[in-house]
Length: 90
Image (cartoon, rainbow, N blue to C red; front, side, top):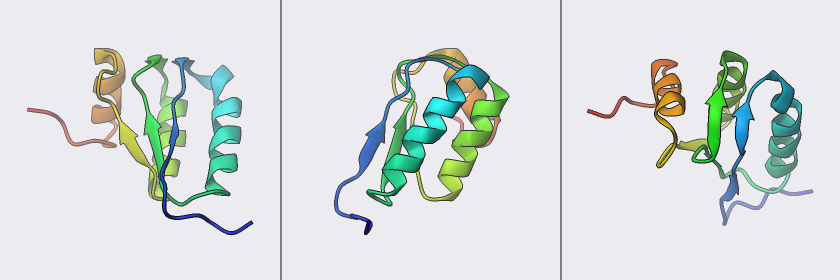
């Protein structure tokens, strides 16, 4: 299936983004990458994120995905920023 580059697709996980949830997240990301090269991962509904999930996000970003942390919890925003995936907000 060819990539469609004209419209970004948003992936919006909910709840805990931990080892138990990663299989589903990776599955969704792999399906979306078949449709488009423009992927946005919106973390506003994530309540907890663990280091394994940060690794998955880093991999997705290395392949061109963008992260949105607007309205994300302080815990999620802080972990994503300290992992180097986002510039810290001053």
